Length: 275
Image 1 (spheres, helix red, strand yellow):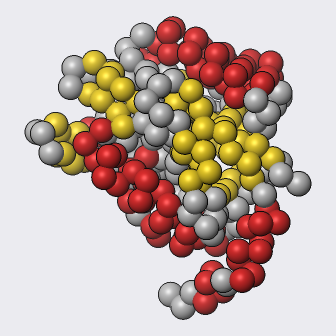
Image 2 (cartoon, rainbow, N blue to C red; image 1 turned 90 degrees about the horizontal axis):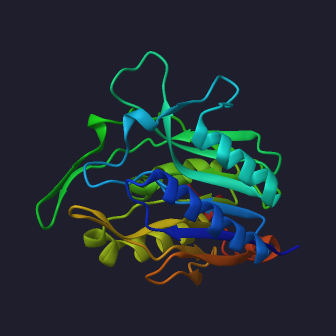
Image 3 (cartoon, one colour; image 1 turned 120 degrees about the vertical axis):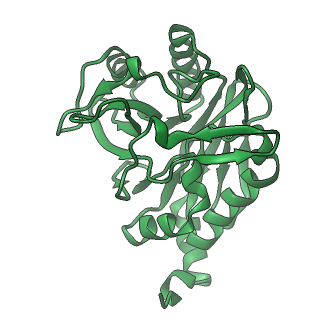
């Protein structure tokens, strides 16, 4: 049975209330279009000129993955109201015993608003990009250390975040753990995105024969900070089946697992791995 998923695209700023209002509106639009699984981009609640996160916004997830901070509470209510699976692409998680840093964490909510999975970004963005803009994500973020695959009605969902995209070994691990669909919520820089975004997403989909959906930040966030956008849904053959342009919105794609099975049967490269 074919099912629809949506990758949200938005332009978050330092105005948290506005960001959450836009997230709610876009999720409602995607749900009205038939999406059963909807993903928000990295840093959906806050993205400012001085960094990806504001420590004061961080909220705690307990050992069962639950929490009652204002951002998570509002998003849990949204998932219940829309009756959809909702991926919070980059949630500011306060980690017990850690001072001055937080987790950049994907949180998967079911239609009852329950936390079904969480993934802490493994690969941190410590680079200087063309144009002289320097990023040091490790100054404020605690890296995760494990891949995560969660069961959803659309199929087993592998979780990743933004810079993870450049590390194919993570995606192979997700597939080995059963992922049929992989999320890549991102705030890809404009400078790198224009050359690498599409090709990397298509490559990860092709080599792992998975559907891939990538919610994205776009536009200017303040100061020199800008994101490339182009939220995508890619099929297991590497075809871009949905894409969002330079505006708030979403990419809506259809997941067809029978088609995926046909691809894997006709080109069984996953069975030929030797390393």
